[in-house]
Length: 242
Image 1 (cartoon, rainbow, N blue to C red):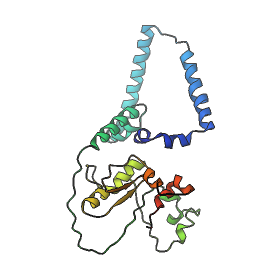
Image 2: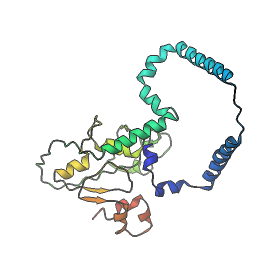
Image 3: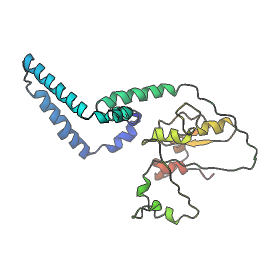
Image 4: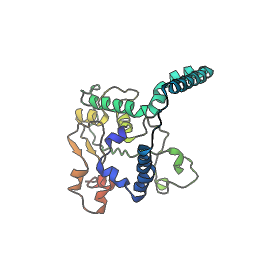
């Protein structure tokens, strides 16, 4: 639901196609019209009550037969509740809205940094979309899916896991204090507060609030970019060397 509510027209419009429209019409609109036009047969109250009681008895019997699984269901109720439809839509929407309210709260500041080394150094942290390591030839996948990376010298790849399957939550996790869901200041905010020059470049949206002096989004980067690559993520490289 975080992805659904965070999607803008620029991103969603790129997925519109003739095939999608046909799917919506044939599998969505036409069946919906058929259901609306269908004649409803109302059962007598007595038969309805008998059917309901028999259904309830059947469900209760099945539940008690599987009573050994009750503890497992209770233990994983949060995950199961988040997956059950349509329950998950309403619950997860509430969770997203509650978390959005928390973004307005004041961040918990981390202990101040003491930088003793005055030697100038530059670190470029590139954060992209997540990918399964099982499909990377660098991790032993049979197909050569990393033809250029495999030729790069001094390349170190390590086992890593993501704590979320969508960008906004995954990004927050990468930049946040490990092992905590509290609203601690994220890495760029922390460095900026401790007098480290931070430049944040972004072509996405919906990230955790970034408080730095030099924030560059897609629109600001486009003003100094020329060429066809300015419409794609290559715009992040525009003027980066300078």
